[in-house]
Length: 500
Image (cartoon, rainbow, N blue to C red; front, side, top):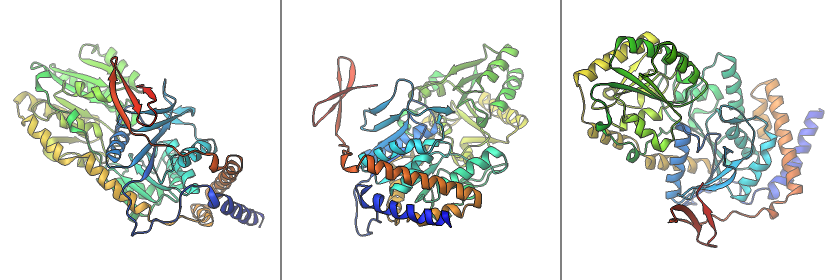
């Protein structure tokens, strides 16, 4: 009874303070007859530049295309070395590098309440209409989505990963994802394809993990900027066959399999070398394999490579190898394919997640998740390279250009945004009820977090009225060269920011 009375008390206070003026724009559904040419969108993830990876690339290119289509985009991530505060990119993107403590694997410490002031300020200061979170592994993305639901901002979530259901880490992660998506308006997955072992379809995987309604889940694959990944067969050594690996050196990427494959391939094929690009906690395992087998001359570790230079590594190879244990959609496979297949580079990958749907069957060779099968498939592809069974590289490149386009991805994402803004805002009573429906103990725990979040919102509302929060001015930015340095000059006040 005390809990019920307390709930109604906080519900009334929240309705008065938050709904009366917490957000500076209407939070009711956008009428269907009203057509907007643009939205104010905030993309949130722990993974963004200068870090490299598929999620980082996806956010950057999607945001860039949405800006070109007239939307106003703000990106929020945690700080990186040498990058704190607000930065502007040359294409006009505005990035908030927030000073939160990083716990593990580039993710901030889960704290929930500590991220609320920043979330509230950014969402109101930028007059955000849609918050788009990326990656279920990102703590920052899930916490901002949690806060946005209470503030009244429409939320969209893109899942870039697949997870199981048996181990404790997956169970805990899935439960937290279920909590974060309780009132998410729309969800985007990057693949349809079925997977091996414990995984099902990428879309169904998320629906099962989070109990999210399947009718509100969309599938929009990744894309590729093919202008930056063009073939160059002249870079290959005619007397050697180079196998290129480019990924984060983590367990999920199958590095333990790779560590057992490398010695066997080197023993069976004297003309095969390995080039490994990337860094991570399992790099030491590959270093040990290289030293124990005296393979320093045949296995080259080039470390972490900036995304704009990864093509220089891909064009050196004849075969691109991916040994991931789970993969919703592998961007690097697309990049490797765009650099030319069969004439110079062929893709070999494990049959997991969304990998089988990335390329047509004639452009990729799949292997089971086992050392023996990977070695067997690699041996067959190596023999085909020696025999000169090739396709014209530019013909393959043009096929990739026709299959994947960021402009198309941006158009499809726009339609998701249009559907999201039609949704009515959930009442706080509905929010509490939805959390309670997710389990007795866990539901009560999440209701307590919602209760504390609402109290904190009211406290911030009283101490720092939204009337004192100035709206951000989205300035048109012109880039020019001056004294060998790129600068950005704002049109309205001619203030200058040097490139970081």
